[in-house]
Image 1: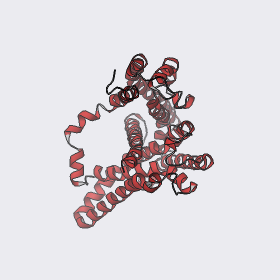
Image 2: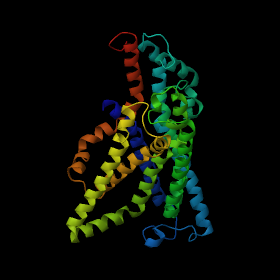
Image 3: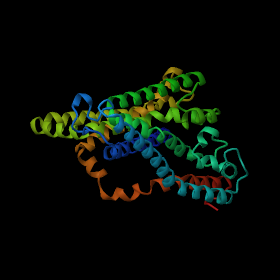
Length: 367
């Protein structure tokens, strides 16, 4: 069971991806609502048009002005995000490259912290351009855990343009996002079948290729980010309406609404259980009894299943339901650790690598 939980902890990466997608899309949609010029109010359009100014209703001059504003907003968002994330990241890389060799007394190994530090002295520029997951595999990458930053930064390039489409044409935006997810699923399933990926491929000799082609690949990680984007589009355009609908519904049919809330939360819990504990036997008895097709399906859909459960759960909480879970997650205490997550993420590979290096060297602590 502990080994299973350890494998399930990989799903935590997708928790951050879906959160990043939701926040990036929702904040950009809000900014579009403040700055875009249109003869029609977003809230004033009818439900069939999914609320929003349409491209057809804008004059040529308004369209040109909106286009310029969109390009300016996209450029500003790219620069702002880069400047917000990169300084601390660059300092962390400098510290790691300088101090990492002092954290281990073990001889260099293909995955050792000393070799990784050497890679950083040569390939730091890949990290600062956020392309290290494309140009390097895990054995030649500087600061291996930084692949996540590269993936999110690359996916963020889509946000302004998809958000703009979703702002004017919500259904078209959702259709585009679903199409991108479907393309990613098809590619991942095909590669899993062709390469023979299994759910425990991360522990197998072919790990470098599995890591580069799937685990740290922007295209295969894209669906979980975009599911967050879809949730943001739905919440931006229909969240207020859904809240009012459920408030009226609860006043008339309180018990029925309570049952529906329980059902939605139960579905979320089932998705969590299936994605984390579903492969219990497969992981417990190597090489496992699943067919390659079953393994490929799990690899393709498990991360999305996990984040869909998160979206359902968060949707219930955002609409004012959830009981003690909602109250617990709204405690002011969480504001403090939430502001430390990025710094903790940057530091943790060096801390864990130092501990591992000390262990390999026969010592109990970091040098």
